[in-house]
Image (cartoon, rainbow, N blue to C red; front, top):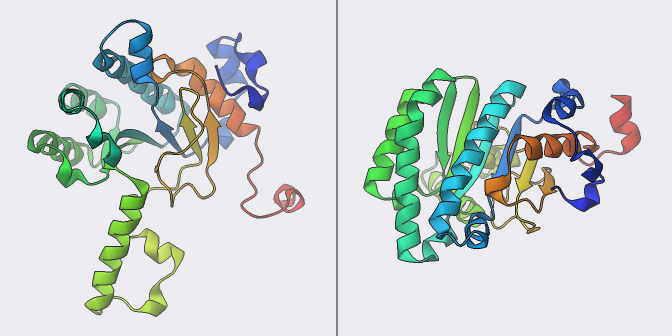
Length: 264
């Protein structure tokens, strides 16, 4: 189910082929970001341990990646583990780290076969050593793939990212590597984790929560936001297509008027 305010509920009965027919392939977002919320609630509703929801959520990730490659979307960013998530129970954190390591081990071959480049943002030094080794391996082996960039936000927080960027730029100023006159928004963005990636065109959050939770605070200045009540483990191709149709119904003005946009 998608946000009732979008007016798209009446399309939920359409099948996948009918939904794809409604999508303008020339107006797809280049970059879609996801806050994958609802794994715990999905598991609780089924009287299962929370990790079962996280495991089922990986199937949604696989589904969305496959559909995105088929459609031609170039970048996906998944908010997989925030800096705040370290506060969760130790058993759950350890299980999530183990799940991440297994995912990297199991998916590397598929990434190579499907032209997927793996990328991460966040304070990777805070992750367990075994996870860091697999991240380095998968990142290095997939670095030349061009079809889709799979970006995982790990030990990530938007405020932490901006703070780290400001510190790095301040150090360069101190060392006379840059001058104050050089600093612009574009220049500052080079210090962010996402340097080299386009800003998200669309951000999708599942589970009915309507907030961005310290995610890509700088990058989402003009991102279209889509909130759905669907829990992440149930968010599959059909829900993704509905979100894309909702996105394409919107007018992206970037500070201009409708008349200016329509004259282009």
